[in-house]
Length: 60
Image 1 (cartoon, helix red, strand yellow):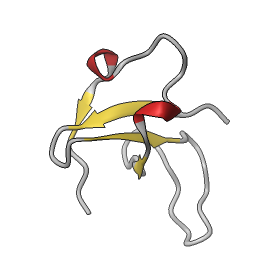
Image 2 (cartoon, one colour):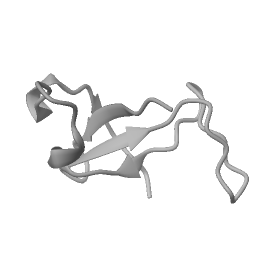
Image 3 (cartoon, one colour):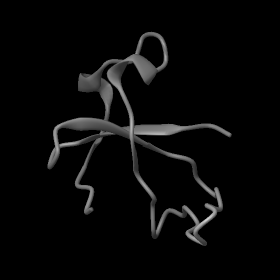
């Protein structure tokens, strides 16, 4: 499963999602309803920096 990373500008942190992933609580990640999870800058693929990420606003 490939992770899609973004920058949550609301909480100033790296986040990721796994498109199409079904979570144990019944949520399914989709383009219309993404499930963003917290990540660390160290989780980013080699050669990718925070400045390269698109900005998103994650609601808690």
